[in-house]
Structures are given as structure tokens and as C-alpha cells.
Amino acid sequence: MPSTVRLLILITTLPGRGREQWEAYERLAPVVRAEEGCLRYDLHPVSGDPDRFALIEEWSSRAALAAHDVTPHMIEADAASPSFRAGPAEVIELDAALPV
Image 1: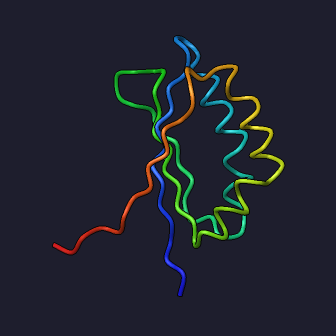
Image 2: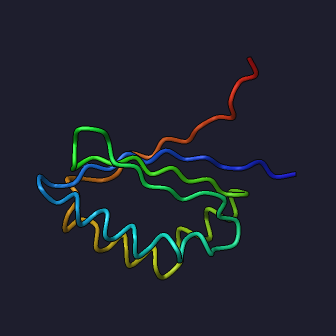
């Protein structure tokens, strides 16, 4: 059985451009959430910094994530994001939680 893939994506926009990141996310989120295998796609602003965000993604499998990465809407979003982002996003893959 394939295991889920969880990502934490750290995004920093150019100074004063955080609103553009939020607006881009609001347009994209319903389309991404409708993709096969998308379990979670949530953007969170960083407290106290309007130009920083954490995107949490969860996918049912690596194949679902790979398919997501090459959708026309993601290719378009990736092409547009340099106009308001300070640099590339930092993508961190998360392990499953350890039992307590």
C-alpha cells in the first residue's frame, strides 16, 4: 500500500507582496483540492510577517504528487510566482509522526 506524502513548503514574498501570494493560492486551491490524490492543500500566513507563508500539502502517493506537479495549472502558477516571490520556495518532506 502506498504511503502518503506530506510536504511543508515555506514561501517568502517580496516585501509588501504577500497579498498576491494569498490571492494566487485562493484561485489555485479549489483546482488542486479537486485533483485525484490530494488529501490536503492549506496555506497559512506566518504570524507577524505578512510576506511569509507555510503551505501544507498531503498526497495519497508519490504518483499523485508527481501528476500534480505537471498539471497545466501548476505549470502556470510556477511561471507566475517569481513576479511576487522573494525566491524559490523551500520544500520540506515530512516523515510520519512518531508514536508517543
